[in-house]
Length: 180
Ligand SMILES: Cc1cc2nc3c(=O)[nH]c(=O)nc-3n(C[C@H](O)[C@H](O)[C@H](O)COP(=O)(O)O)c2cc1C
Image 1 (cartoon, protein in one colour):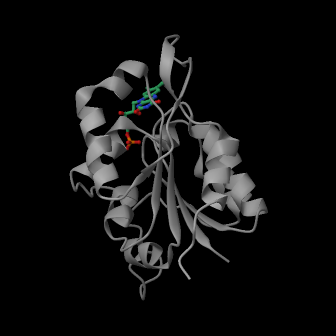
Image 2 (cartoon, rainbow, N blue to C red):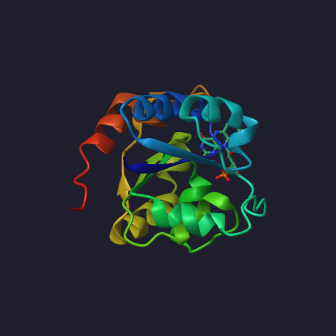
Image 3 (spheres, protein in one colour):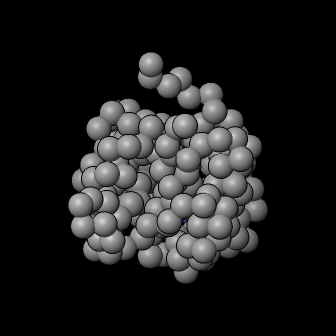
């Protein structure tokens, strides 16, 4: 069974991550969800726990298993990492080597794990040259992006920044060429 880390960050689109977690679990993946503090303002860990049947992680310092440093063991056993929705903030942190919460630290601790990032944000945030530079940096380091759609966004603006369709995200994970 493949282990997928699903990172969820602080966006209105966080509710769609529940669908992603549900679809991937039903397709036979072991999905371990890591939420940022902001993500928990939008959706509760209980939703993901109920759908994935796994504990949801968000507090790096809650070391419940003394024999195990959780951010390292999660990173080590991951076959793939999907961040959906990915905020401008997490993209900026990953592009700049910041590891100040469970999600950014687990991703930092991964070695040769494919990472798929699904940005979701207001259009002006998405086209901000700093965000675009961060996306370019991560792309150059081998991170994959599943591009946002154009839509009427939660803020009322029409533009690019809506999370890619759940089906597209799930299909992209399924189409991943796993290492032998
Ligand atoms: C109602 C609301 C919606 C938001 N939606 C987004 C969003 O879609 N994308 C984004 O990058 N930030 C969004 N933000 C701002 C982020 O939550 C904020 O930058 C936060 O620091 C991100 O933290 P995280 O990356 O640790 O989850 C939103 C904030 C609020 C209050």
